[in-house]
Length: 419
Image (cartoon, rainbow, N blue to C red; front, side):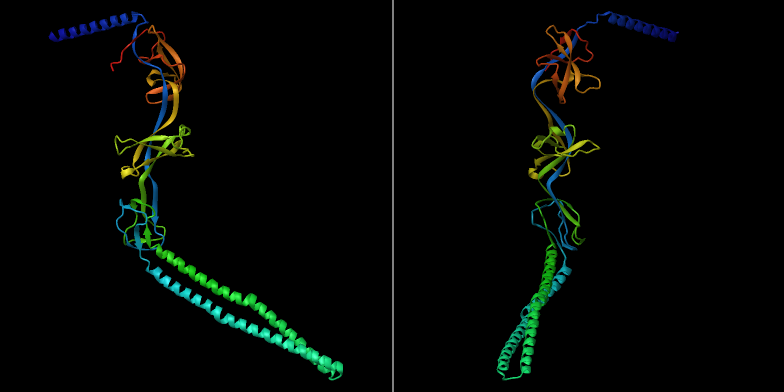
């Protein structure tokens, strides 16, 4: 009996609630459409507006070097250098080059031998050949002179009838023979001067030069056994250690000059044209919360990544004390666009047209507190403000809260901001 009574009471209660909601809905529908709506407003102001674009970047050393071995050998001396600060010219490693020292001793001996051979040619064989040639020329000239004198005497005697013709002919033959011998001696001397002596001397000089170059090459390789730091900085990586074998080109350490760093960030290529070297950028290192640094844009890449449609931008920062960690991430913010004396309204005041990023409407409130819809063209935008390029003149009272689906011509009530 009690259960039936409770069920009946519950049914009656729900019927009463449904009837009450129906009556209330009908009353609300019968209210006039032109009701007063509470809104919040702000003034459209004229001021300078700058659009900022942010991207995540990576901190890199401005100057860095990878030091490699330039000759082969076992690493005889090399301490643990990772994270150590070294100065330019400090010794990084010393290689064992005893085989090169042996080769150098052999090359030095070969050079001494080549120099001795050249000296012997200069003061021995070649001068002797020159003396012999000079003696042959002198003898040939003297023989020719005697033969000519003998021929002249016999010719005079023959004309005077003192001797026979055969004696004159014999003297003439001797004169011809002497002339031929002189010509042969002169030709021989010429050939020796042009070919034999210079060739021998040039060959000896070439051997000396070759030996000198061999010795210089070995000296250079031996000097590479002591590896020195090309720059001052922090050793960020160490690839080989004492006792290991280093070959030419193998990496030993990486050094980074952390006194100045470059933050490399990828920005959309749509804003790249608005950026230039010298623009000021702010950097917020992610591993230093609350820290904000500023520095100039040093590079805007001329090439764009075809996949991500981004352009690499470099920002140079001082790193006094080495607080910025190489390889860590940082948020980079740059000013992409700037408008001076622009009409600026809060971004919440704009209702954008569907499918458009620069067309929309705003609701302005007149002196009778009537809201009117105005079409506007939007320019630069930030996270909270927007530039109105057309539609407003500045100074208008704009609805910033309660403007969504607000009919044109609605009577509004302006709520005061508690702040």
